[in-house]
Amino acid sequence: MTGKHTWAIPEGYIPEESTGPEPEMESHETVCVLNTTDEDATIELTCYFTDREPVGPYELTVPAERTRHFRFNELEDPEPIPKGEDFASVIESDVPVVCQHTRLDSRQAENALLTTMAHPGE
Image 1 (cartoon, rainbow, N blue to C red):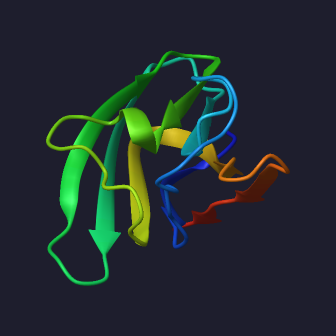
Image 2: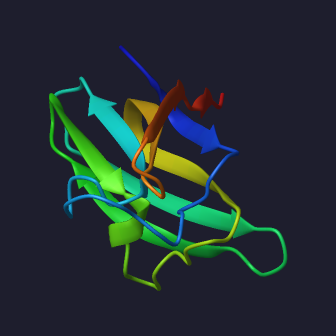
């Protein structure tokens, strides 16, 4: 089986500004989730902040044997993730999954894209 039930992304920041066409070049944070099991993955994502209570869980689904990319900018329920504020996130799944973090910072014409594996829990 590939993956873990819990993942952490300690780095999170959605820039307030973007350049270029939207939605492709809008500054964003993304968690990419790979589900190699034969069951749909029910995901709960919680965000943590420097100076306020956590927000979540955001309820997400990744179908069996599929991948989904979730932009933090597009999370709405229970509330939108604020732009211009540091945050971290924990992803919990009912089946083992693999998570990766990606950021596109397009505040200037010379865009920056970074990606890293999330930290797997036990």
